[in-house]
Image (tube, rainbow, N blue to C red; front, side, top):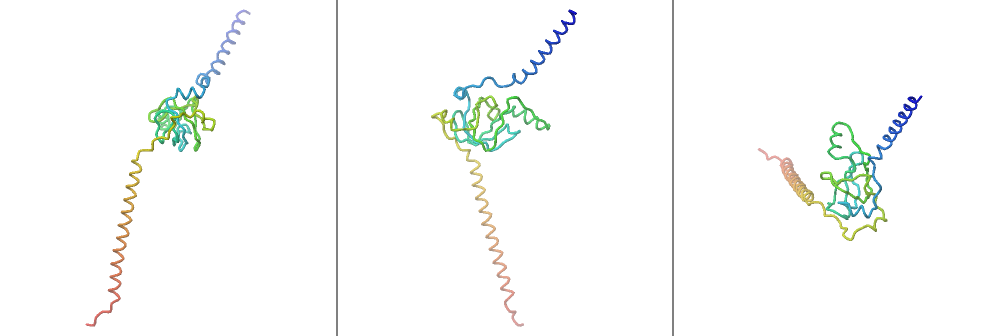
Amino acid sequence: MLTAIRRGVWFGTALAMALVLLTAGPAHASCAEPIPIDQSLAEAETVFVGTVTGLDFAGRVATFEVQEVWKGDVEAQVVVNGGPALAELRAARAQGQDVATSVDRTYEFGVQYLVVSHGSDGSALADNSCSNTQPYTDELDQYRPASAHVPEPLPPTVQVETADEGLNVWLLVGLAVAAVGVVGAITAIAVRRRRQPSEPV
């Protein structure tokens, strides 16, 4: 009888521990208590206001057009990764697979966000669902620092190349018009010669 009771106690304890482990798994990987936004902005490395213009990896990697920089060094266009490391995402994609974490953040195309980043992932900024990144609303205006500024424009290399291409296009158009004119002149001369009556022998 005593043995049966001990077995029952052991079984009940083991079952309770298993339930605790199963339910505690996601909580272990989830976010801690939310940090007040003013504290989060003070601790963040990079903060900006921008609109999503491109998405990849199921919406977890977003390209932003930056409207205003609140903190850090941010260009007019920046990529933000709200999921696992980009290297892991690319390696998994190459094998036809996917990787994810319990704190992945997804973004929506065309939505303007206040992005609060606490690090970087190569050339991209790092983010996740535990940060204070959020769609921008008028209520966030109160946190806008006096140093907020428009980002530096993109390097002029693309503009210069576009201008060069434009010049090349007009040059080609000019050459084409000239070629058409030459062909037209030659054709006109040939037609005139055919219309002239032949002289008697």
